[in-house]
Image 1 (cartoon, rainbow, N blue to C red):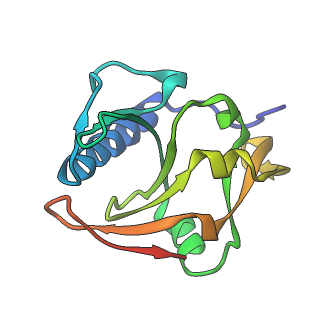
Image 2 (cartoon, one colour):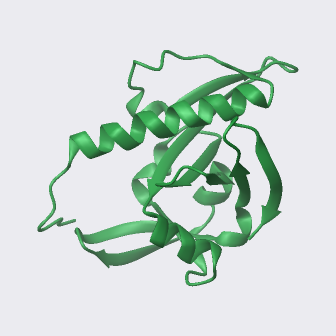
Amino acid sequence: MSMPGSTFNKAAYDSCDRKSKTLLVEVLTRCGFTKSMDMDKELYKDGDVIVKDNETNEKITWECEVRQRKYYDKIIKGGFKTIHIPYRKKTNPADYYVVFPDTYDEMLIIKMESIKQSKVIDCFTTRGDDRFFDVDKNLANRYKINSDYTIIGEGKL
C-alpha cells in the first residue's frame, strides 16, 4: 500500500515508545507483575513489554501504542465508535494491546485475541491507504493512572 507524504520519524517513535513501555511496566509492577525483559532491547515484532504474573508464573506480553490526546478523546467521548488498530499487528504475539494518550494519564487495554477477531477495513489516512482492525470500543477497558502509577477503576467505554 502506498504511503505518500509520510516518512518515519524515529526520534518521535523512540520518545513515545520508551515512555509508554516504562509507564506500562511501572503500572503492572504495582499490580503484582514482574518485568521479564530488558527495557533497552527492542523486541520489534515480539511485543513491547513482557511481564510475569507472580501468582501463576505465566508470562504475559503487551503491545503499546500512543495516540494524540485529541484522537484518544474521540474514542472516550464518543466521536469514534470503533478503535482502529493497524492490521500489521495481525502477527504480533502479544496477549494485550494498550493505547495511551500522549498525556500518559490513562490507558485502554484490549485483548489481542479480540482485536484479531475484529473485521478488517481499508482506510485512507494522512499517510495514504492503510488497513486496520475495526475494533468495537466496548471491548476496551479504561484505566486512569495516578502519579504513583496505581490505577483507578476498570470501566467499559
